[in-house]
Length: 459
Image 1 (tube, rainbow, N blue to C red):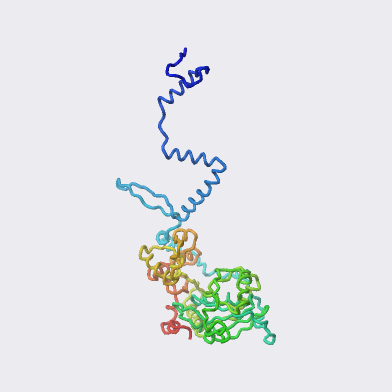
Image 2: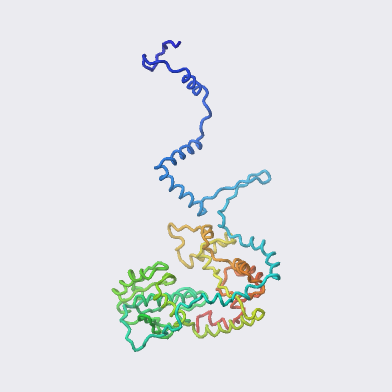
């Protein structure tokens, strides 16, 4: 029996008493509560409940994406805790592939390379297979006219297209070929009055390139051969129009690898309006994939019109002959590799190798010297680990050597290294010479006297 409580009952007087079973359960929970949930458990329960709601998923998805990107970019990584002599050691764990570990890999592979050298067939002897050549086609046909009909009047030019060629000789050559294609596309007169100084060639006056202007009409080109030295000054009427100051000619900021459509839509109207535009510098300012008529102009400039100066070609022929003679054991066959491991290349890549703090300081100085604040702009974040994971780091000479050995070239292969001054050459070139003892460079094939004229420009 349940009597009336003198203390009062919040239930209405007419309501029946609660079930003993329900009261028993409530009393059990009230009197003997289980352990309290921790904050972490409450957060987990809350997140799970949010995820299973439709709106919660939409709110939670961006958070998951951002967290994943932070982990991928290397800014967040897990700490690894281990016990060493009863002492807890905490160390940072880097994302896979974000560190330069090629020297360690080489030490493990070197014994196998030595063992295989005397038991494998050198890939050098079969690499020049005629079947491979059959799939290579020239970008211009043999019947392509090298010059247009000189008697045919050219269409009136839309104006002067002025560029500045920068970089080494290869980069300058590519810039000129791209500029020829753009000039043809815009029906403009190409003028290159300035060559940026290069640390190797020091050719500010373009003596290395005996080419002055390129005029383009439909499918033909007329090249007026002269030295760029004669075109250092702009035509007088153009200079007068811009107050005798080339800086007054608008310098268009064109993004790298721009399409032909961009030049027609953005550059051509300004060229027609002002009569002259310039793009400085012009390196890598035209896309690789372009229509066939634009690519054809590139090819004509590269393979038909543009030539190195006589001094470069004469020395190059001598060096090739010497390389063939030094490769007599393999029938005059050798491998030529263009290493891109100069200091400026390493600095621009924003990658880290195994030089520690000294390397970081050197690269910061090189970036500031070459690009003046570009890498210190607000919002610019340098992530060496992410660059390496993405495959954007220049291969070291060691990595190039391991790649060649992996392709099947053994230690009897003659290798010519075409490159500028290798960054810390004594350190990074040693393993490459260890893998390929028959290694040559320009300063081993040519004498100091032969190379001396090119230290102050092309003669």
